[in-house]
Length: 270
Ligand SMILES: Nc1ncnc2c1ncn2[C@@H]1O[C@H](COP(=O)(O)OP(=O)(O)OP(=O)(O)O)[C@@H](O)[C@H]1O
Ligand SMILES: [Mg+2]
Ligand SMILES: [Zn+2]
Image 1 (cartoon, rainbow, N blue to C red):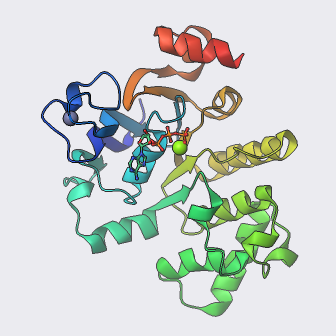
Image 2 (image 1 turned 90 degrees about the vertical axis):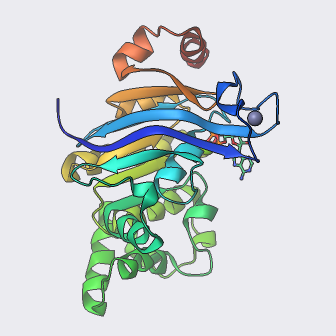
């Protein structure tokens, strides 16, 4: 087995005060205190160069999980480790977290409104990530922007346009270009193709596959779309009510799901 690059242990996010019974709750709504256990004791490992899919119905905690790993959300409990680093990254100070996020991680948000700044141009959005990774030379940044636009098949003549004037597919490409800007080791893709029409979706999925093979990035890919998971993921985790209820190789999960919920999920998507 390849080396893991990111290991997560018992990650838990509770919205609300919580009570001693929250973690035992069957659903993500604690029957005692009414808190929401968005993510409940999730452990996982991401291996070097793999695409790890996360599937599960709406509200099962997928976004909360990846956004916690990108330090957008602080978890209530749990640990995460990078290979070769002894400390739990959730205990890093804010400067260390920022550094990790700016230099080693990329994120494509479910909503472009969260992932992009609509007040600045498409090129500016990507340049922002470069600036945060300490790129300083204007000509280097310019060259890198052109490279990223080409890599994500964005027309160069749209670089100075504002996100609101771009199509949904282009907005997602800008998010991808931005996420790749700092050559991240770990990329989080949260429903990168949802809301796009099928042909745009197919091209974007091909693009993600191509980029992953070329750059050997380790990816956590969230999608409730079986087609997306089938095409891209090496392994899959199935989430329900904040927990991981099944995991395995993608073919195995899709062809021979063991958990009744996964069976329902897979059958309903055929
Ligand atoms: N800021 C918040 N405050 C309170 N509850 C929240 C907050 N954010 C998310 N939740 C709740 O946490 C649970 C998990 O939400 P999350 O967005 O992670 O689900 P998801 O699996 O990404 O769903 P979807 O497929 O619809 O994107 C949901 O019950 C949601 O209502
Ligand atoms: Mg989500
Ligand atoms: Zn509770």
